Image (cartoon, rainbow, N blue to C red; front, top):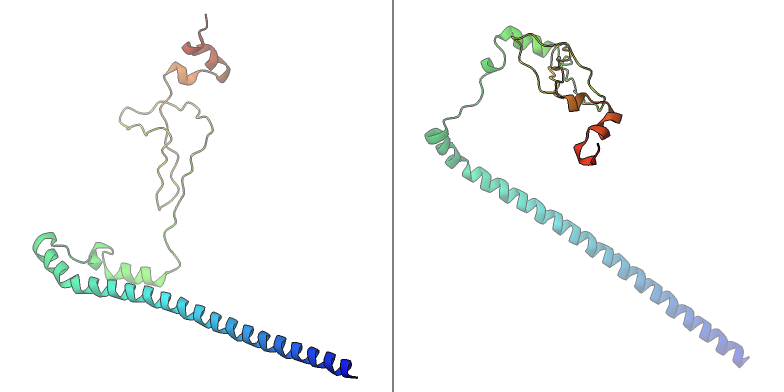
Length: 169
């Protein structure tokens, strides 16, 4: 019987020690999480303080910047007449907020260009590979000048034969 009580005592003592160690470990982990959370908040607060200090420095420099503008730059805020010519245009623009300007994207391709018809002498030739885009109606593709360089007009299989570096005939 004595061995039985001794074994029960050891089991009970071991269980109490393990349970108390688990409680201590859990509390330590909770404290560690709380400290980590506080450190994160401190870092966030430091960042916010730096942002506010930068804004304060900027706002403190505004009178000096205004003096520079008045003395040297003499810049003014844009007036409504620079954008819209009349109150009627402003009302029409405000009445259609969904009618924003359309942007047309120009994409260059690797496809070979076909020789185009020669341009009129009064027109200025556009640079090859440049496409003009506007906010209005779609524009026709600009005509490109015909290639006059024989090397550019050579067929791909003739290009190796026409290359002087190849040491041909």
